[in-house]
Image (cartoon, rainbow, N blue to C red; front, side, top):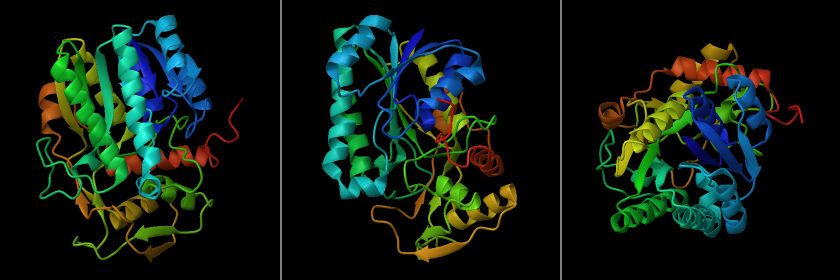
Length: 340
């Protein structure tokens, strides 16, 4: 099967490209490189020994997207392309709604035009907002607390409405919890622009000396140590979930929603302790106020994905930290000095 991967040069996208190629899929990647680097695509080919097609373009560019479909004839799409920073979405919501929602509508219209009806969508656990209870199952209330989460929920609703009127579409919504880690080779990993918005890349950059200290965003949450608790999932496990979802689509799965998480929550301080152990570096830290839009505790009930996709997360927190550190120490400036 030939698969179009939008946003495939990004953190989760590049790791999914590796696992798709390992699984025997042909892939075509489109990415506007707004928060990624083409070097990741060359390294994916290096890791796998397989070729891929890469086109630098924005999914909002309908004529360019049409050319990609006409030239490559994909049979399915994995849709990662989108903006993803919670704080940034609070500051500039219109940009998030336009980029994340409008681009998906353009993509689906072009898919329909070219007779492609198999789609895996990169959603997020932020659609649940502040959960009433944990672990969070797929039928929990949907109440996102920030524009990023609301943009993901809006896309989910668009896709549900599309499927309701076009039953030949097979659509899988994958709600990620907190992707971390890196490929064990250390050749690809998370390389955000500017100061990281997420905990793990911030921690790795402190450990490698790029940043001075870790800002702990609040220590007054109703948790065991006062810091936020999240379900961190290794990006390779997450990537393998997309392979399983595509295999299910090929069997005609209709519209399905799955949580991809480990089912276990770790606090910020627990993550810092595990990373210090993995890296051998003490991490300077400072308590700062909570970030707007964050919730106290969020972790998954991933049992549906295990039962229906035969998928489960295999990597523990120690491995997540070890692989994150392996990537950062090999690439202290990310892809900045990668071969061009």
